[in-house]
Image 1: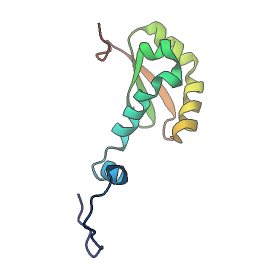
Image 2 (image 1 turned 90 degrees about the vertical axis):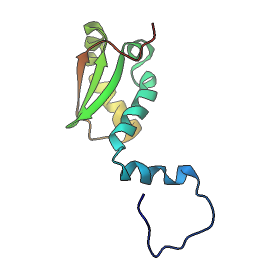
Image 3 (image 1 turned 135 degrees about the vertical axis):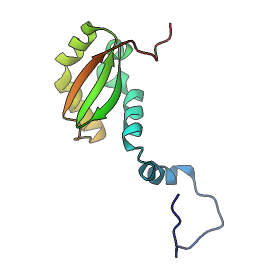
Length: 112
């Protein structure tokens, strides 16, 4: 954490919620935070069925990479790609995502 010189100090604890945003910026966790937030809300963005078979993985150069466990579901998501991008822009004001790409792989988070 940065030391803040010449700022008045109070002898009280600060609520964690008041320092979260500065911690995220200080440790360069913006992208990780966004991906986790997106994973948490993925069901409401693509629907229950597609959320069961896909998960956002990372953002790189304006491309959201989504892990999908079968090419059938990758095709389904590609058909509604415009709708997904629109929902992302509305919900997160995240205009940095310009495209969506898919990687077919076994989803490690799924429980057997």
